[in-house]
Length: 294
Image 1 (cartoon, helix red, strand yellow):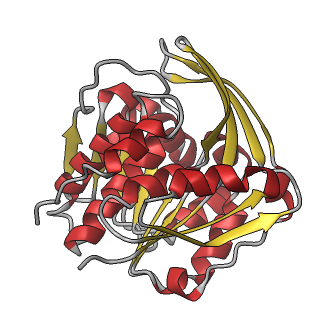
Image 2 (cartoon, one colour):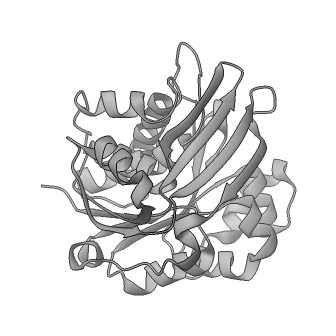
């Protein structure tokens, strides 16, 4: 048995440029990447919105995976579009722009199975939408993510989401934006958030340097899972979150002693996300997913 997981976030069509080339209209979105990773370990209920122009793409991407798309609302507006160019020297998104499309008028609605899921991941999207999702869920384990653009413009709402979560996923720059500390003080920044509201742990994402899980009493760091070549880092953070929470759901554990195991699984999923453009490699690995140790 495993706990069910609800995942809410964006469903996008991405136009991605990296030093290895460009791909247009590839399936993306925080809900898609995290749901694919989490579905290796446990049943997933995905919540989001998609335009009719992107419906076939997302359903094809999810086919054969343990993802229930009953919470996917279909809109007459176009699917959200995201354009990005990734910088492999600084390992960040050097340029990006978004056309909100279906997300402009979306009000999240969680079907009963998603409301009742013991684990909830609220992926990066407008914090007002994240709060709407949180209000509908009865999850015992709540995790969330954010983006620099919202941290800079809606910091109070971002903090509300963080304090209503058990686990927060942020990179060092985002963490600095939330706390006002320097990026190199990421351990103290993360610790300063733990204990606020229900927040128990902060997973600090470090890209090619791996990740760490910080609680009030411990810091566990893990190196990135080795890969032959990075082609497209899009969705790596969402895959990390999906793998982390999927491991917790599979083992039915959310205690601090299990977090290092969950972090290893999250990093494994992140590594699978970056070795191909889009979701292709992440999907291919689902059939070879392994059991998580208790």
